[in-house]
Image (tube, rainbow, N blue to C red; front, side, top):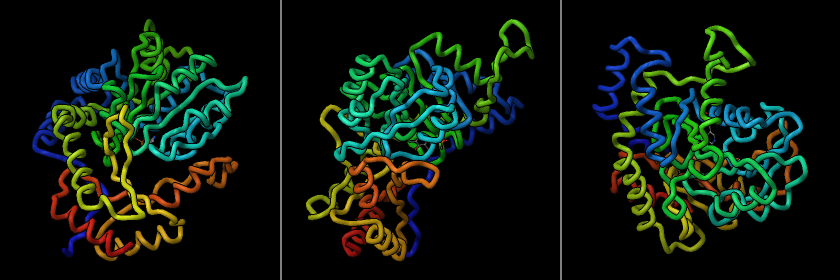
Amino acid sequence: MNTFIPISKPSITEKEISYVTDAVSSTWISSLGKYIDRFEADFATFCNVKYGVSTANGTVALHLALVALGIGKGDEVIIPDLSFIATVNTVLQTGAVPVFADIDPYNLCIDPKAIEKVVTSSTKAILPVHLYGHPADMKAINEIALKYNLVVIEDAAEAHGATINGQKVGSFGSCGCFSFYGNKNITTGEGGIITTNDEALYHKLRYLRDHAMSKEKRYWHTECGYNYRMTNMQAALGCAQMDRVDELLEQKKKIFKTYESYLSGIPGISLNRTYDWATNAYWLVCLEIENYDEVKRDAFMQRLKESGVDSRPYFYPMSAMPYLEQADTPVTYALSQRGLNLPTYFDLTEDEIKYICDVVKQSL
Ligand SMILES: Cc1ncc(COP(=O)(O)O)c(C=O)c1O
């Protein structure tokens, strides 16, 4: 096989092309138009929540949610150390202080036991991340939040459709934030959404998203707001994806199962692990190699690349970034070096997965 197999690629069919073409032809190309309302309603229904507030991307969804929930200077927000950098940056952008908690090595999500260790009188919120498609333990997290009177914001950017005891992520916290970047299970190109059941929060999010413009008086702004709106063109793409959401999520499951059938039983490696209380959205197939460090992992990825197989390293601990202070999160630091993600896109064929698995075996 001499083609290069990328890590991800969106699934674009005639439906996506026709909806986007319709949006463009309608001339409603900015943030008003029929697809926006439809996409927000479709996604809220999908998560079984009352409201969806679409945004320009997942990063600003997180920022908007934090601001709308009143998080700011002097507040502490507890986050896992293993995540995409937007999780910590958006906390910093509000003026609040991010406090890192270690992860549960089984699902790579924030460890509820680690949360309780870092709660202080300044803690205002917990921001769990459903990493690589696996939900964080929201039952335990919500119990801690109740005990200490904290707000919970789910970072569900990577876990569209994942469930806990049958309930979709994005419906457990005060709100859930999703990304629709081109490599996600559902894409709008760039895009995001905040899901919530809280009517007051819903109105606040919409108001802040649109420059905090007064409802009664146009171009009158009662505070400093943002333009975090999604376009009708993005939403059109999203509506087509939502029409196909079951098919897309089923395909991710099938891809993982195929990898599992070729790689299970090989000593020293493990793939995504899923708790019995959860269903995994399998955003990305994870491969962890026992006793590897960053150097060995990167050399392994280089061998995959030489055989035409793309991969990506697990996220670095966010607290390892030069502008942050290193946290005491040993599980995050160990696993971050041991893991990588394998190609996980919708059109992967069984032959391609078999080829990738053969390359993995040879490269170990
Ligand atoms: C966990 C997590 N949070 C937030 C984001 C930010 O989303 P976006 O890239 O749409 O801004 C991402 C994006 O990939 C993510 O993986």
